[in-house]
Length: 560
Ligand code: ARG
Image (tube, helix red, strand yellow):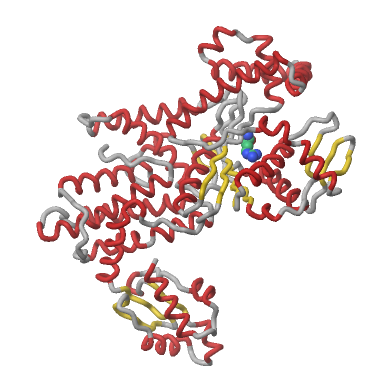
């Protein structure tokens, strides 16, 4: 935000080396109440240095600070309070957004840098869980936010396409599988087999051994096992694609765990060369500080999840030269990633420092974890389709003559689910409730989409055209909107730094609320001579709601 930077620069000059710029930046506050100004600077820390009371310092500064951007400067209780010149700021901010349009708020922090984002990453032949939905939604938003900040983003779907679950499925398929049924309805049937296997396994432990044997066959390249594996993988991917399509999510790479089958030996050798590999009960491990050792190879020679992730890290560094690598994975895997990062750092690879685990909490239903295993499955596609159905019903009631009803229903239905997820800080557990998500009032996705549609309709009705005239602040009520518009890039910046899309979600709620208040108090279209100025504010709101929703992975319908 330009005004804040101006203020900080002026302070840096005044304080003349007695405090570092970084410190000053941290000290500048936004007062809780608007009668205390738009920014303030506490002078308490300077009292010792200047041997003067904070209030006297503030008074002295107040007489020496000058900028056309400031309307008034006050010294109150040891604080230096700055009141922005609303006309100047409004004119600058609105001019900028009228020129830059959807590019407004973009940053260059990530210029010429690659960030890989490992997200979604469901397991083949297992249902797409709520945890995977969270990873998909959060990872997609972080990808879009990173791009907005100038990074080149590589979206990676690290599919769980290898592992003992294939052994289980093959056993189940051989025992109870029906080709006809599977071909008709692959995921449902495979899921049934998977659940049946787990039910039967409880009373018949022999099944576990059989599953292990089948997985061994697969690892040894047995033809029948390999063909089944491929078939299961393809069918699952088809099913996952439907979900990605509904959510509007795309990936640059679907290299899953199996992709690293022939890339692990090298890693194991490297660990050995560096003297990090230790034998423990026939298995190979790397000892770590402050955490359990990382298991690299089991006693029977098979590699593990961690080994694959090590190989994947090397592959990604070599292929993309990432400066940052994010892993959007539930917090139950925190230890795994701590181990992974420490192994790499022990190997002496500096690029490891750019790797970050982005954990998140659970999705709950009636306060309990939503499980995919024991029959209590909630199929994600069903949930999405239900949300879309409800959204459609809403449209039929509100706006039966809408032209592209089905398209809008998808945008609103999926948007509701996405927003509900992203509006909470990712580490919080969230309660799954379709009714809550789809509400039009309150802090929901549809509320923001609806506000966007309202703004769009005003612009259409008022025949707004983008112009390069000065925009004045006509209504005091528009000032909160201008302040929010002005802070958009700060919000984007902070949400990237904290890997926290909820900052953007909350910001969009604030902007929508301010706009709806404005809409309720000011007759925007009534006065011809004020109309274009007022509509410029509306345009700014519409542009930011649209762009903000896009950054969360949502669409903003023009009408709904
Ligand atoms: N497939 C894993 C799971 O569902 C998530 C993989 C996350 N990515 C990774 N590189 N380990 O638990």
